[in-house]
Image (cartoon, rainbow, N blue to C red):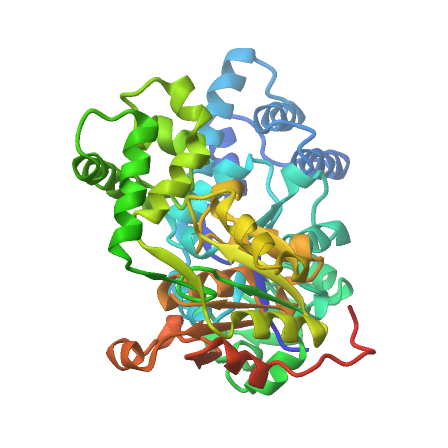
Length: 477
């Protein structure tokens, strides 16, 4: 089984503190005239306190208060000063060389990336540290001990991360530095890679630095697997709608009628053309917000907040679905691709679960089209950004699609038309394949390469039948 995801420890792998917390505490205590040696019994007690803090059962403030008591610091005023300085010290993180660059390359190679971290601090604070050292933007999923209530090497930590990513242990690797966390990952069934490692650490692979990870054999460009072999792993196929299953054709009489009906429905006091021109301007503002935030507003919010905020919200909200339907008609007539029906039915017959996964402002029009054309019975899941609330390329919408279809992302394929959006989103979600449908003339202008390179390029839906053969009856489902 091919590797799809790579999970990392955080502290000691991506960042460190210029002065270790242990050294800093010793210096603070020495400055207060406090002995810095604990008895064996107190050392065991501190270790247990840290385990409780890592499981989220003890706040950082309470943990340090208890530790200071072990050292004999009992004065409340002294407590507060020292605890505040220790908490401030925690935020003093510096990057370990090569992390950002290594993750950027691994992301381009198509791997899903995650973090499995023990910490006594809230997840938000941990993410702030990861962002500050330049790696946060590459992280798709994170499992944090204070959130889960257990810490490494508990197998629940690794299982939770794999579940979030939709991967099996055999499809994932763990990169760490501590003996116990590497052993925990190995026992969970993951391939292990040691970096900045402790003496005596055992792993399947060893890297001398984060940059050296790029030379680990299992982290190479996953292009060695043929399209045929990738397709053999696929159980579900999700297809985009716009410019994939359907196309928009300009039809001025049809569009003019839609503009007139839209203006009449609202009760506009200007010409349909002027009214719709104003809507188009507002829609561009909305689209920029949606692209920037990867959010999609439900129809009611679209019309009451963005498109017609100067009209009575209660009235506009009630007709939001009709307004969306008519507004989309002002852009042209939507037609299914001539081979869409045949391809959908044949892929279904061959044993694939089928789904729709589309960025759209409509909530009802696509399901209505599927019903009217007799196609809804062939689709296990229909995920629309207007209903789900997130847009491609956010991996969350892809992961939701796989969840609804009941398949691991590694066994799902996505067919879209936009390399910059559809390839990156599919890859980040860990989909097993991504196929881009693009006309030959467009392909000459913008042949997708690098991180936007799909597993296959087609110019008609019928070519999917050449890629996806009938599934074997005994295929694990």
